[in-house]
Image 1 (cartoon, rainbow, N blue to C red):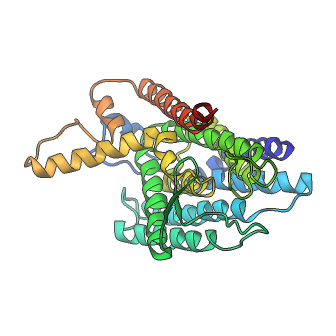
Image 2: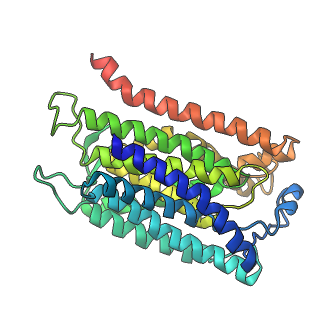
Image 3: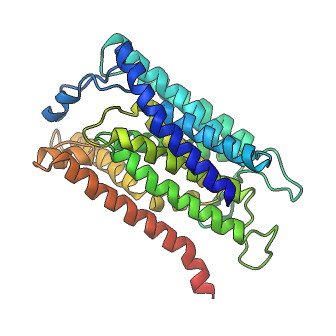
Length: 353
């Protein structure tokens, strides 16, 4: 538990003070956010706000994880390193996208096909590595079995598993990206979900089959180390939120949203809770569904819309809600969704007991 506290504390401090430094550097280089003209007019006031702040979040998570192991003199694990690899790979894709936007002074960066290809490469490499490195019990960081609260009996062929992993990673990364439309919204929602994974990792460590064998124990590799990564992610987002809350002094950009989504996807896969992720991150699902419904209905109805604008947060903006009101209420939804996911996770114990 000392490692968890050290990791979270370090990540928080690096993000808190590192973001302030990043703001100065980005402003000096003129790396400001471009705003789409077809969005809410209130967003035009945000033009020029520094972006690519997600790099600081990832650096803080990595720093927190390494500090936890350095000060406790414990070895790093394959599970923890793989989640960090996934975040780092996706932040590189996001940085490329953000840099094209600011350097060419346009609101669109990488072409969608190119961006997806980058995500796909990182996701597939992660998935391939995640089923390697068995420990002395034969456990690998992830499993080819589809999981909910734990692995189910549905085991996928390796090729299908790679596609499944790609769906989880790309789906979650882009869901967080869609949510990142208002100051602090995606950051706060990620805090809730990452904290949920922290509690899951701690519970799995206490009830792990390697140390506490029983009918309900968890066959998860390195659960406490996974909790360290999750706690570092949550704490890094808290530090970043100090500067990202309305009115934001910096945006995370695609560099942040893709990395955060990748981190949550990676945590779901290594904790064997893949199908629980939509509950733990329910706000991301809700916002993504609003886009899917809007686009589908628009095409099927010949130009009619369900919402005034998608993603969902912009619908409420156009209805006259204040930005801070939307963000706080959506944070509440995110917190309730994470609580529901944790209740379902723990409910297995209550029912069986």
